[in-house]
Image 1 (cartoon, rainbow over the protein chains, first blue to last red):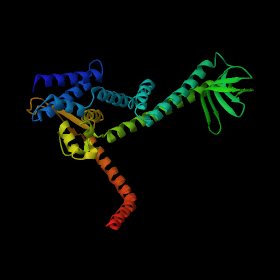
Image 2 (image 1 turned 180 degrees about the vertical axis):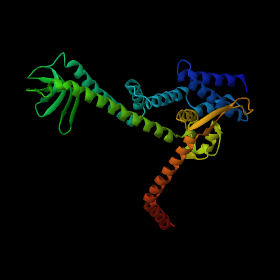
Image 3 (image 1 turned 120 degrees about the vertical axis):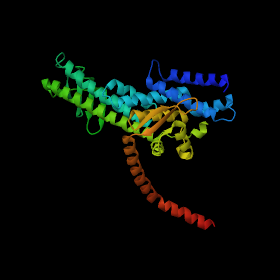
Image 4 (image 1 turned 120 degrees about the horizontal axis):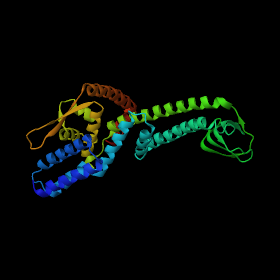
Length: 231
Length: 106
């Protein structure tokens, strides 16, 4: 094997290692070693190991950046599937969302679920400081809102979660309506908000984690592509 | 599933697995991706691996199924058998119609 070919293999492996992530990771080092072994095996099987033959082999192995992106997605989804950390799961679903519709759905579910959790916990925290502004509000048109009321009877706005049977759901600001609004829970809001917040947190975490686990299995089972077209 | 099935036949290293899959065009796999999948299967405890100096000048990493891997592939095979049988039953009318068309053409 000529030094040109050896240099090209070293360069490819260095690019792959760099793309796989900074710092030392035993797993990433193992993958690079294995890919190197694979390339060497392939090039040694060639009757005449030329730079052109090597280029063809490297194309078949794949672009280091694409391989590394796939590795990072796998790694973060694997970690998220065994974690209860909302931050990790949010990062994992964000990365997954770039890969397809199911990822977008999971990410959206997570944002809405944790958004609702935040509204419940914030309401419980703010209630002692703004007792007449934070609550469960019955607004006109049978709209039920949980959150912070702007205190106006005309151009009423409520910041939080609003539902209007049968299908309307708003997370954020309920569009201006004309009062009156009526508070339903009083001091009971704090335990109710904490309970709802915990329920929302656990339900969202459980749901998204199951989606990630399911997706992880599907990806492995279906991760076949037409390598012939790359070769 | 195909990778696990390949390993049912015994210890194999990456290139051997790829060669087995290459024989079946629809299961062809991007070469670099194989190692990412094997790495994840190992993380899930479905396969185990070991570097072995095969006397080729560079070591090869051999993989084999763990007990959990054997159980997973058996479960997958069972599911696949039922799934393909159901699909074949659904496709029967289409196959019959295709045969009739061929007869008509002849």
